[in-house]
Image (cartoon, rainbow, N blue to C red; front, top):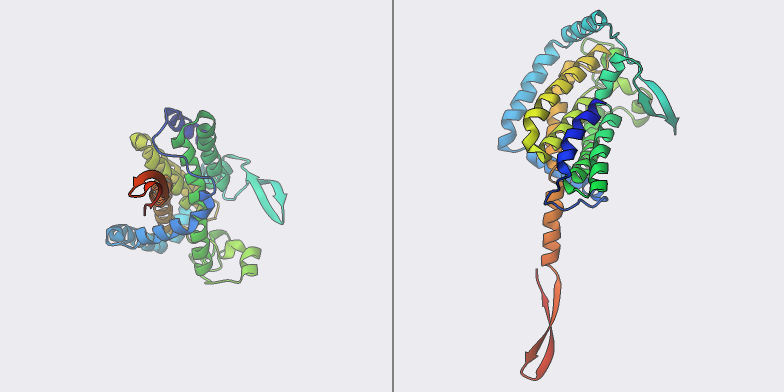
Length: 301
């Protein structure tokens, strides 16, 4: 419901229309390599140094206090009646995977704020409204969120498998052991033993809000506080139910922001590529030459 309420205000304004063209549906997948490269380029420039300083500093500080922060979150969770475990229930299972898990109480509802299904719901709310109303801005926003989720998942999965950090719920050492590059079968069979760092839930939530802010800058003063509250509640609950350490969050936020910024350029990139294609075309036109009427061909590039 919170996701629906948040997107309702934004995409109703998008029904007024927008100058940008609609993004081709296939671009959601075909542009993943380009967005990934753009993200790395954007992330490793001089202007990104202050952001890296914040990420590294906060990650180090949180890592030092991870155990204390985890205990405090669990204590507050019990005191507030949220419990200390994930109680989402599987409602759709197939191909050996839990395809859809839904909340069963307040604690699991807070955890669901970072679930991929929540953000798919937000993206389809924008996409559906844009499609049926003929408005390009919400349509493109929805596709950019889906595109960003695919791109960021590729990056986060690479990092999770490269670092192999234990989640708090299965930690066998203070602050969790790190087992870099587990086998594919080992990772799939015992995922919580390897997938804590960085937080994919925090990353996805940051990504979604970043894309919304990029497409609806006039509502930044409303969206930004909602994002801060959303990430705070989600981050707390994931420590409370033993899914993540606090130090898993800064890099997750950084990835979500960078991929979100680059994904929000998808419509602009399509427009530029379309202009380049239209400028590089043959033009056939009649004319009068020294020997009479002729047919001329011009290739612009």
